[in-house]
Length: 76
Image (cartoon, rainbow, N blue to C red; front, side, top):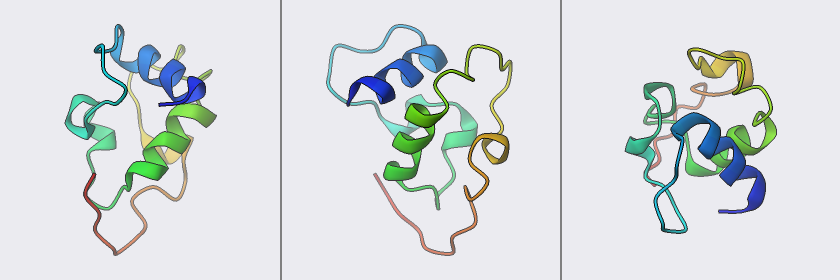
């Protein structure tokens, strides 16, 4: 996990586990869409890390308008 992703994840989850990754199921419900690929989650965590401070509840479309639009299914 690179620095920007780590900062975003810490803002959402608080203290992170002592491993170099997080599981998708550890993230809030908004991130657990079947069609939301792990690369997109990394992008969201990094690009919008500064916005997570002010948000009480995370709604992906406000951060990442294309989230959930794909018909393909991915697993992490």
